[in-house]
Length: 327
Image (cartoon, rainbow, N blue to C red):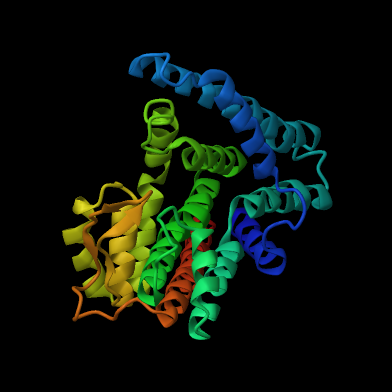
């Protein structure tokens, strides 16, 4: 039951404290990644293959030293110091439950996601469009200055569904599957993808490795998240939207998550969106316009509820898996 207890403790820490109010370790990692990128990313001076090789080297320089250090300090060293013969109950509780839970807590962003969502839905309900635009600009990459209520709600709902997979479920999956090393590797890789995974001249080739590694690590968690959304919401419609719409989406992982989530919520999402002053045509997500609900502030709250209830479903499933494994 150690894994279950660690996951529950991490979620409780996130519920109580949300993100650390002071310095977050990922902020320091981001600064390190910026430094490495500036040293190794020679834009317009290397071939595409050379840029990819530089990106691979940058990924390894950024991730491996931290991964090995954290694994040594949090896994190998405690195990060597507190063997089963030497370890007391207190040391067991700390190194097997509390310490892993703290690392997982730093890797998930459940309450942070909920707070960002409320910062968008609340002003929308009050008619404060300018404040809602500012809040949604903090969580999406599309242009937001001309968005009205439906456009803001669409962007926010899509972001909540997608980030539920990235910020919560994928981190928990890798923690369950590979412990502290797994969740650290996932979170560092996901952070590098967020920083380097852009399809612009600066990062198109340099960020290739970070983007592909993140795609691989999110492949199974994204589909488990989509299944969770479907089971919690409108199940038949969610699976139908997933089957029909996910293959049309450019991201192999965002497609299943957002199509299943939109179907589960019965909200029409997707469609054209403006990025960097150019309009991008995107496939529809969820039920067709006129059949499903239009995006709204209430839809943002429903998306938050879907993510939260899916999290509780994961805990319930993990409980029964741990119970069965102990029999």
